[in-house]
Amino acid sequence: MTSIVHAYEHLNELPKADQDLMQAAIKARSHAYAPYSNFHVGAAVLLNDGTIVLGNNQENVAYPSGLCAERTALFAAGANFPGQAVVKLAISAASLDFEVSEPVYPCGACRQVMSEYEQLSKQPMEILMMGATGGVHVVKGLINILPVAFNADNLKRK
Ligand code: THU
Image 1 (cartoon, rainbow, N blue to C red):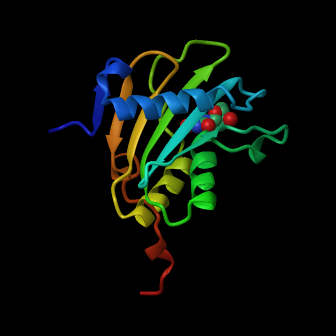
Image 2 (cartoon, rainbow, N blue to C red):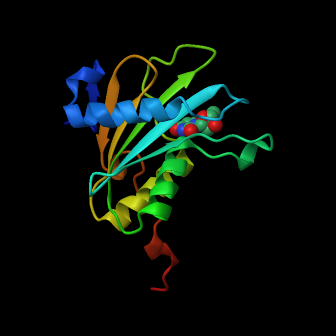
């Protein structure tokens, strides 16, 4: 069986354009506002026309009011570039307290949002994940990390 995860030992093994997208996520990570968890996440969304939209986690003293990097980036893309298909999403995470050397996978709520943007985009979304150091995991298509998702058809009368 072919693996659903393409694992790379190092960022420089990826195609140059993907390296650049991850570098954009790493830069976005440096602007995270995460004083409560000290866990900084950056996300970079690649749109169909080549535009890259950045996001990072934004926390709040009322903890549940904060938002993950992935949704911050995707909602910014949806708000500012409506109708543009989302092609790829790169994620990088780092902690101020310990080394993050494994790729960090998006939380369930972000996967749900990614799933909807993927449907709107009519193409499988490529997800590139990395810690602060170490390798990169690439997954092609939300189906691999969110099978049998709740979707818009579920709201329609049959
Ligand atoms: N976080 C993200 O931004 N993305 C993820 O994929 C996992 C978690 C954020 C939410 C919160 O600000 C902090 O990381 C700790 O959970």
